[in-house]
Amino acid sequence: MWLFGRTLPSYPQSRSHLAYHRSSLAPTLPQAGRTARTLRRRWYYLQQNVIYWFSNHTDRHPKGALFIEGSHVVPVTDEAAEAKGYHCFRIDTSSEHGDRNRVLYAHGRAARDSWLAVLRRACRAVPFDEEYELGAEIGFGRFSRVFIARRRDDGTRFAVKVIHKASLSEAERELLRTEIAILRLVAHPHIVRLEAVFEDSHTMNIVMEYLEGGELFNNIVGRARFSEVEARELMKPLVESVSYLHSLGIVHRDIKPENMLCSRKGVGADGGGGCASDGSASDGSPFGAVKIADFGLSKLVHPGEVMTMACGTLQYCAPEVLSRAGYGKEADLWSLGVIMHLVVRGKLPFDDPDKDVVISRTLQASVDFAHPVWLTWSAAGLDFVRGLLERDPAKRLTARRALQHPWFRGPGEVGSALPAAAVPGVAAAASARE
Image (cartoon, rainbow, N blue to C red):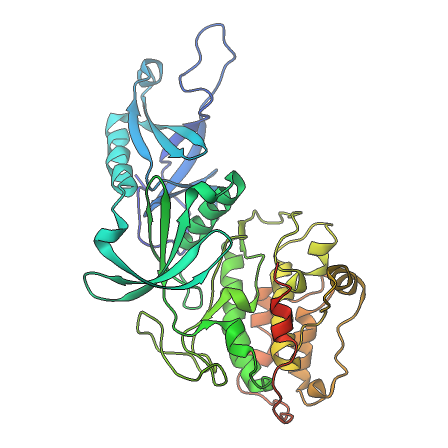
């Protein structure tokens, strides 16, 4: 049986199915005279405390995920199913908003018991305070507070997001589950690493990799405009990480400097230096390793799936997101283009205190590349940023094509830099966060 694994780089092309699933609305097999229900075959993969499920054993991307930490797994007696060789168990998840359960069927008692043993270990709730010591508060969000914590056995520092579950709506709870499931799934040097999740009846503690440099946003406020070389050093790892996410069927949907963390503070942001908490070497950018974080609005999508929910931060949203005409992965590339425009030009492509003006300009106006700063850029560099900020998503650079762009192929020629100037407009943009 394919029960568990530590990594999930790709899915094997041939594997045995793990269990059969039947809706929790029908906890037992139908009796005579009732509407017939059949078991639906699905393949399940357990990684740490998240179960990913697939409709077919050849699927590359999961159809969904079930976060099971703090859940209860119990065997279920179903004589009719057992007569056909199937033994079942139930996963019960409790929350402030009610109880949920899912019934799964395995081939034989031994297979069922094996699942029970593995799932119970994955569900076991270990008290956070036994493994970590909470320190100073370093930030806060809409429904969370962020602290530095030290792991008791070796002193390693981490960032811990503390969430009081009673303050969450059902929709927010589902977004949080999705975020954790995605972070369990990914492993990339430029995506912040999830270390562990602790949950009890009242609180959820999400332990993350700690990056000393803080948000990219705070590091570019007051800093000189990026040269073309600096912009390339910043953009390449970001494009690589977005390409990786898209290859897994993950769309971030809220890419912006506030959702990127730096391993060290850049010049102009109180100086200093540092490295990632895992001791890895810093990149060549002014801020060391820059990593994408905050997957609270991210979504696992099927190939060709069209999303319609308008979400993200207004100034970084692609035109097709604001038009509500449907959008895909290409929206993330527009957001990267906005970041590139911000650090080079010193202002957002379309910014105004009036949100309606921002929407109108994003939908109708063209990005202005007539400013002298762009006149110093190489042809390849200009073509790259224009490709990201292409209004038509069908013509916009995809993440894969962006990685293959000539601008990233070796040192190449870059334009000469204009005299440095403090980045204007960035601080004002902070007040327009959505």
